[in-house]
Amino acid sequence: MRSRLAIATSTLVVLIIIILAIIGGAVWYFMSLQGGAQYGGVIKIGVTVSLKGKFQHEGDLALKGMQVAVKWINDHGGVNVGGKKYNVTLVYYDDESSPDRVPELYSKLIEEDKVDILLAPYSSTLTKAAAPVAEQFKKVIVSHGGASDSIFQQGYKYAVQALTPATKYLKSIVTLLKEQNDPDIKIALIYENTAFSSTVAKGAKAAIQEAGLNLVYEFAYEKGTQDFASVIEEAKAAGANVLLGGGHFQDGVALTQQAWQLGWKLKAIGILVAPTLPDFYQKLGDAANGVMAPAQWEYGVKYSPDVAKNLGVEWYGPTNDEYIEMFRDMFGGEPDYHAAEATAAVLFAVKAIEKAGSLDSDAIRAAAGQLDILTFFGRLKIDPQTGLQIAHEMVVIQWQNGEKKIIYPEAAAQASPIYPATNWWQR
Image 1: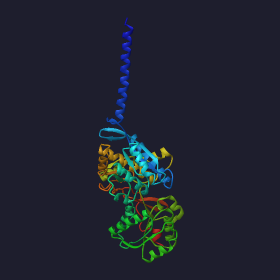
Image 2: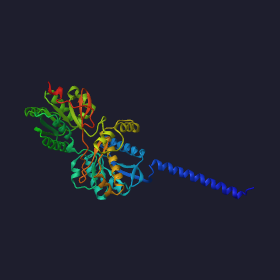
Image 3: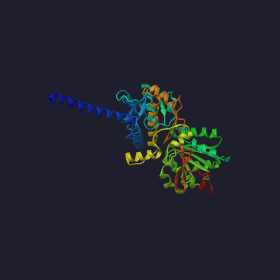
Image 4: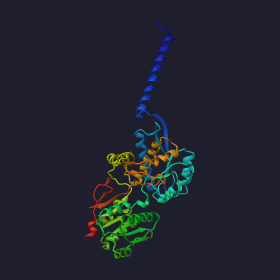
């Protein structure tokens, strides 16, 4: 008979073989999930979000957009960095919509949390408070809600932008007007006298001049203005038949409503912010039809991997339908452009890391300057020197028969533009 020692030894050997087989199988399975690449660890993305204060609504949506991006990336194999696969995690703090809190929190993200890359807070105001900290510590920071061009005119090396800058907000509408080949276009530019709207207007004037169109009237009204009768009469007297401008929801509604009530015959109307919201049509009815607005993103955009192929650029991230479904599944609500642009910023950030093949900030920044990708949010490419976004076009929506339709650019469009706006022009 075999000795007890021999039996015990044999049993131990069998157990070791089983354990090694289990470990080996687990390693093989994990490696297969990672596409054969070695697991490298976790990439930390640091950001502050406004969960209190005046940017609370936008901050909440932005955070959800970031979380959707992180889930999509991790569910699709993570990030390949120099042959190793990394998962992504989000490290965030509430900045309470206060620029005074931002520098301290970004310093904490960098020094204590040891994040690898940063996202900027929502709004140009808070982004301006975060960018100097990123510059001091030489960390790449991707702006998702800071549209002001001035952020990228300070000589910052590490700040890059994922959304269309303010000076280009109305450029898409001006391009549409140019494409109508109408020699009788006479534009009135009537806008809110705030930093954002004034920057948009400055860009619109440059685009109008570049397009060879005729600007016949310009007026900047003070914040809170609700009576536009005298301004409208002056614009009509100047012969204007196209209205561009606005600022935010209330003034945008009032300006459009009074232009309609005072019988202003307009071939085209392009208003900031207000027409993108369903309440615009509910308040104005038929007067809303024909009105256009620029938007960073809209539900029905037609960007797709096939469009990317036709453009000769790489597609990255979920499709538009997948994105909306993921957002609904995770949060039970609907995304808007605040969420979408935050998602896009995460996608751009990790794609820059992947292209760099490194977590070194200088390598990431250099790679970001070389990226040219198409996402559900649109095309993303920055000026390599300034970090300013140069490829993402504002989509243009137009109310048509009570429905909001995307009419520009062609790659995203659901319908053709109605020009001239029939109900406004033929009355």
